[in-house]
Length: 451
Image (cartoon, rainbow, N blue to C red; front, side, top):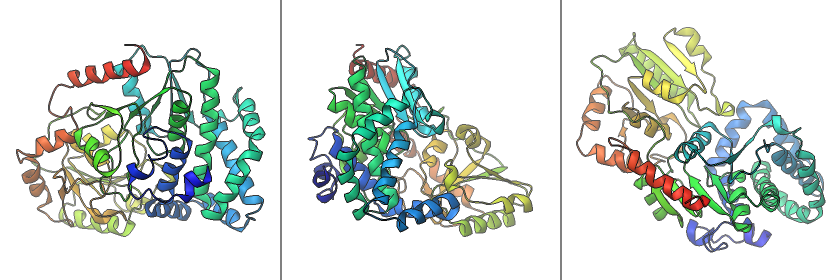
């Protein structure tokens, strides 16, 4: 397992490397290598460093782990993390389910909701990861299953601690834990014919997908966000079928990674609206992502306020609380600045006349909801055009604030060619989504066995 997972460094190209082990299907080694490739990337390292700066508990845990011995305490810490991971899974109360899913974040839940909307008669066992599941009635048995496997797992954990620091090791170890748990779930329940995942890189999702293929089940993938076309590495999609927002996302997988699935395009999950323009701007949104540069945000707010003292400014933090940047002083100093986190995205988008963002997939949500987007790459520490939106003509790039920004946005998004570019990212934009939804529903039914 170790050789296949961590010592073979041939995955410089995603399809040739990661998928080579599995012959274009998920298996355990492929799942672990996907997690390893994601969690050891420079971007992930920077995000974890940001989390440690903002969260004392993570700093303490990381410091204690780094001081623990590699012979006993660090492998033991990883094993405890594995136990915590599988004991957080639940609830398992639904009987006779045809499919099982697992999700961690709100946008993944929205994607899975779409599956249930398309095929409302499916019985889906929807699992999530919360501390509230730790005391569930099935968790004692799950813990026992892990404990009896500890002697076989220990050599793998010992190699992990010698190769990577805490977070990559813990994430890779948790993927193994999820795989073990889900293999047992499929073995227990013959009715579970399909796994449905909204991520192709999280430990729980690829662990579920690998377990499903190991046990002869099918895997359905539905994307929960745009695929960063200019990321250093794009995880493959080795599912049996995939439901994607649009052709541009499919092409990113084909050109930058690997996609062996049968694909249906369905458009964004949000309500598509035509682009709207105001005679006078009343509200400007600044939507943030990971690796936010706080100094740039302060400068941007000051520049807007100098030229537009009357406008309302909404600063939306990344929805993951661990990545929140404290701008409370701005809110205290200026009654027309609102700092938010976790509010319904669609509501906040439509409350703004236009939105400024960095390398965030939220740009696509805003455009689909009829709000122009100004892309300002200085807002975060990610590479320029991380998502590939500028290169493909989807978003208007601005280098900073001036009084002509809104005029430039009008000129950019009123170009007749822009709508076809937008439709390549959101297949339902500007049209009737019924035909797309019917085709996706038919495909889902075939892979669940209801057709």
